[in-house]
Amino acid sequence: MIWLVGALVFWVVAWALNIRLANSSRADTIALRVAVPVLFGVTLLVLWEGLVRGLGVSQVILPAPSQIGSTIINSTETLWTDFNQTVLKGALRGFVIGALAAFATAIMIDRSSFLTRGLLPIGNFVAALPIVGIAPILVNWFGFDWQSKAAVVVVMVFFPVLVNTVQGLRETDKMQQDLMRTYAAGYLQTLLKLRLPAAMPFVFNGLKIATTLALIGAIVAEYFGSPTRGMGFRISTGVGSLDIDLVWAEIAVAALAGTFFYGLVAWLEKRVTFWHPSQTG
Amino acid sequence: MRNVVPVLTVLAIIVGVWWAAVAPMNMRAALDVAERAGDTVVPEGSVQRRDISVLTLMANNAQHIASGYSLKRPRLPTPTQVGAELWKTTGAMVMRGRAFSKRSLIYHGWITLQSTLWGFLLGTTLGILGAVAIVYSRVANMSLMPWAVISQTIPIVALAPMIIVLSNQLGIQERIVPKAIIAAYLCYFPVLVSMVKGLRSPAASELDLLKTYSAGGLQSFFKLRLPASVPFLFTSLKVGIAAALVGTIVGELPTGAISGLGARILIGDQFGTPLAIWAALFAAAILAGVLVTLLDVVQRITLFKMGFRS
Image (cartoon, rainbow over all chains, first blue to last red; front, side, top):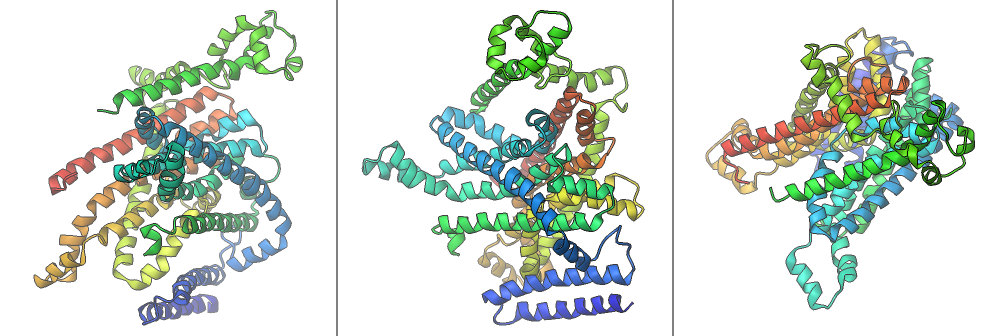
């Protein structure tokens, strides 16, 4: 009971504090911009902890955050092997291969406006499809190890990046291209100095979508067969053997990895497209 | 209309590459089948063939290449095989009056469609409500927005089995609930982001004009902000419904579901019937296409009636 009341009190206090912080005169400082969402997140965790303890929820159903935390500390080795197998080998390699392939394809296609007009609608359509479904087929083709996971990721990443890059390469207007011509710039120079930089906001848009897809693809592919390691493998066997706290630990690692991966791409975007209005505002 | 010829050309190229790829992909399986049927194959025994490249095998056994196009369990089926399987499990079932038998993809598509639509409804509602909260409250803006972004970087598939276990423990027997939750989880984010943009799209001068009419908060919301956000809403709805379909299929994949397109893919994998997987995949693609097209039509009609010019 004390847990329940404590959590609710904490919730109310944190809420009141957040309202004061957000409406205070220094709400635009970086410290407060970080503090408010962090306090919100902590409140959620405290509520979770309090509800689980206060209502005596069985840990088979939902373990408390503190318990998940101690599982993470106690099984770092397992978590690291899984992280290495799924994220570093499967998702990351697939992401790099897929993004590079899409980028190269976009630049090649871009030379022909006929192909661009034909490919853009198809690419847009395919990017909206539930491509995860091909996971069992690719696992069948490439075997159980990380190669098949990377292959799934390649296919999932390819179309969003392709579509966005092609769109980005069409961003420069006639005036800018004419200016390059008056400088006697050739195709390559125009591409490198004008069109690729102009396409970068679009490319990063595609890359950001692709980061999430990459992790989803790598984990789903493991449900269809994997060596005895990997996050998807651990989650599906953990659910079966009621190792729920380990499953939640894997979910926490996946969430952290996903957030970090996304943050990395967003950080790169900021460095590369510093000139774009959306970054300077 | 200008794009029809290029699109068809690219489609033809894709189908051509697919067709050509069938021969090398299925060569080994075709040779195994031919050998079992008593034909001469160079070299004999599938173990001996394992280290020889597919191209060499094709050169040495040219007479067996054609049989790779009609295997029962191909590694890569031909487009016609997939089409035939699709027809067998949809159109042909309808002709026999068994459109909703458990072996028909129409039945499984219907199951998937239901969770998709419920998830879409839930996700869209959450997204719109969240956007309204974010636009009108500084606290919500500062505390919700970062977490909305973070929530999308979490691979939902990792959570999917847990959501299903949780809802089972809570005594929810219907399989549709966990699937709809996963669909809503993927669907709400694009709606939220676009609606925040849309609700903020009226210029300050327009909001000021309404103030001079002494319009209250509710009135300026319903007469200005909401109508102004409709084009943003529709664009995000099209993304959202595709995301909801992905969510539903992801929710069906790892969980031992028995009905739904995702379950067909899973069962096809377990029973080694690749044609069933391909047919289910294409059915899912068709479903996605139909849903997005429908929303597109609704968007055009609504925007036209509202007087937006595009």
